[in-house]
Length: 223
Image (cartoon, rainbow, N blue to C red):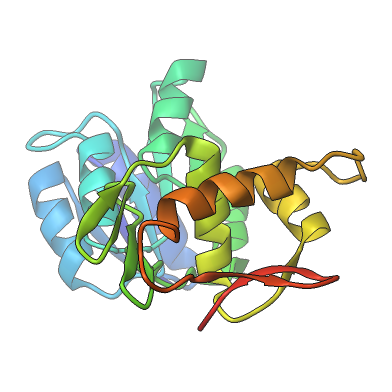
């Protein structure tokens, strides 16, 4: 694999790079965050190993910037910041794994191998649409015919699920599992109630109805 190591400690950087090369990997070593961000952006790497405390730009900001540009290269944070909050911050920033110093090289090697086996993520669309209805997944805003539509979080999740499966019937069971995470029949009309509310915002103020009831089956948004 082609691996980029962004590590400012010379001893640690050399230790990691030499060990990975001995295992047959191609390794580039960058000692600061600013140059590391540039190299990660232009290079075609299989994995990035990133220290958190870097000169120039810190590791968390580096990964956030990469993720903001749709760069999905797997990232392993390698750092002495081992608190629970530190790990949560790193993973929420877009890291795929987190290893605390001091570390055993064998564990580092195993984690790299595990990341290399993961299927590469496809770029997620930033918007979903049907006819003149548009949902922006980044800003969490919904418009139809240019008019803003104010949705509650559950309504947004329900509409997002339908838009992602545009043209396909979604049964009440499917919707309960996907939107409410309920995996049994609760004997409730919660789906129908939320669909009705959603229609009141998405369909009723406009000429054409997009949310269709498929009798005896469920609901769908027309393709």
